[in-house]
Image 1 (cartoon, rainbow, N blue to C red):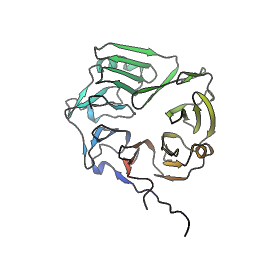
Image 2 (cartoon, one colour):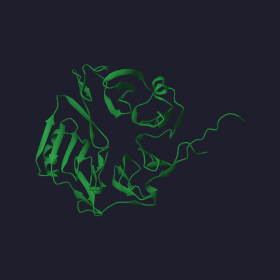
Image 3 (cartoon, helix red, strand yellow):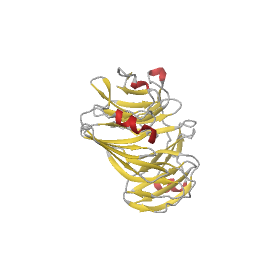
Image 4 (cartoon, helix red, strand yellow):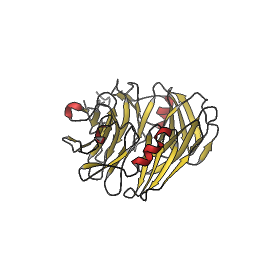
Length: 309
């Protein structure tokens, strides 16, 4: 009778039956008005708490795949995103507007795979974007562009959500090189056959690098703190104010909660949920609610993880 109660979180599941364009959801953002935005493999939509809205356009651009985290609101309140075809769009006055430099991106298209992420300043006066396998593109509103290429054979760049660089780039192949916040880690602590799939910034100077085979590497201010094998491929980590971690996985591994960084280091999960689902993004809105995007069953919402059944 004295044992503490344990609540299993209760989720509201939103799918195509509720108006989502697709059950494969990859990106989540909240704009300044409180609307929730979701990027799917069948376009972008906005959720007002009751219904999902899609917006008309003349190019049918809102029905293309948005398979990256490249979605951001500018200082004018316009939501921007990139589709899987390497094009950029924004929402303004109830319609979808193509970016004025999409033709420049099309000319570069044979040299890059996709737009992994981007950063906007102001009302879109400047943009930096990660063009996978090519480098970083810097564009200005006067239509001038500069491409900063990186060493070959394959390069990934990572940006911090909210408009800042993580300042990390990785070169795979026989020569490895990695920067974390301008700390040069050469060589990095993994072998030539390890492919890093995600780099995630945490609090207090910690940065997590997760590989495709499950290995995780934890750095702090550019110094490796620990590494270990992890039974699942990490896709996203959300760190709570109390230091607990919500860790999302792909390949149907769901979400695991760790009470502390030390528990995460030991692989000691306090609980797991959304088992059998592949998690793309974990997002906490300004009202304190949690959103989990999946590749199989749309979006799951929980108003509070500490209350449930």
